[in-house]
Image (cartoon, rainbow, N blue to C red; front, side, top):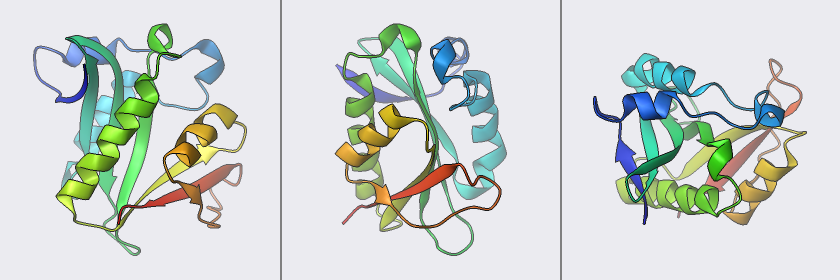
Length: 151
């Protein structure tokens, strides 16, 4: 059964060893970078989730809160290890993350920045209610800023 797990001293090495397929490495940070960013973003409630299926770590995600306008959640990183892709883990985990954020209820939306060439990720986010926000970040003009309203 898929679930979101906290990072602990027992599982952090399993999370750190995750890796996407070679063709996806330009789209997501290495897993150890996700862990580090979770630490760096602790001041804005940054948290890394291990994505687990029956005790096996299959992926990781990093969520933080925006500390400036517009206030909301930011799905900074989201990955499923290349060995476990194509099994529905990404969709199931994204549903769990969105449910968690709805339950927490601090903000009414979550945003994610996706490279325009990452059609697979864009389809996944659209399937879960994300749409192009229309915002273009001058620092990453080759990316879509997608938003999902949680209400």
